Length: 262
Ligand code: COA
Image (cartoon, rainbow, N blue to C red):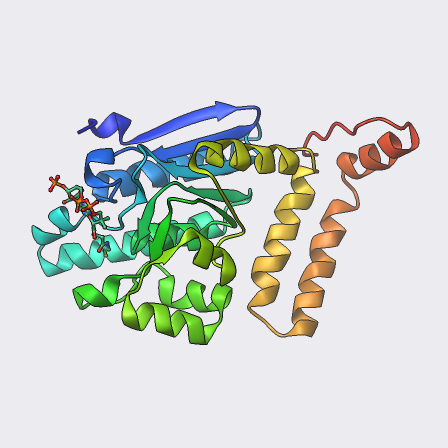
């Protein structure tokens, strides 16, 4: 087992931070230490102007994340279980609300909280070896880190109810067919595909990306007119930026823009 300091591997390359859940012997299941490590990374990435995109994946070839650590759970009195659920739910909301895009690179089993972590991410890319599902009802509990809310918003209520009530797992192909993931690829291409998408996002203006994410997330939770007002306010924020002028200037000068996030 990796010690607590290695429970989450963090690598930064070309403005992309890759967070790797690193408990392969436990299928990268999330325990309290992992929650804490993820929380602290997400908080520091929020204020790090050098990071534009986050990729989350799992160590090893078998699992992205097998959900909550059921061995740890077995030792917990009820108040501690409540604390875990509260903390994982608020962590996943922080990931959803992070001011930068998050790509989940699903490299194997993503069950329970593992699938919920991908649902809180903005974009999901799955390897052909992925197996995803909200399996909690099979343990006589329910998805508690946003799954009952985010899955129906992504795949529709009928499909979400089927998957949550049965606890059935879906393979990569079905995940793509039902819109649970954006893209599938061979396992050996997963990280390069995620990186390619991340790099393309990095070429765009970071303030624009932050505002677009905010407008989509906030707007989808309200009626169309309120959503359009949210979009308008988000657009207004981009107008006085240096990056907006750089985009126009680069176009006129027939060169690639260099955006600085100002
Ligand atoms: N928490 C803690 N340990 C876990 C775990 C979890 N959620 N999921 C897997 N592990 C551990 C296993 O206990 C095993 O450890 P061991 O070698 O000490 O016994 C190791 O990871 C390998 O898992 P194993 O079950 O032997 O592999 P498998 O390939 O046969 O099955 C899974 C893989 C993911 C399908 C299976 O482990 C599983 O169903 N896990 C639980 C998933 C789940 O219900 N998550 C929702 C939690 S709310």
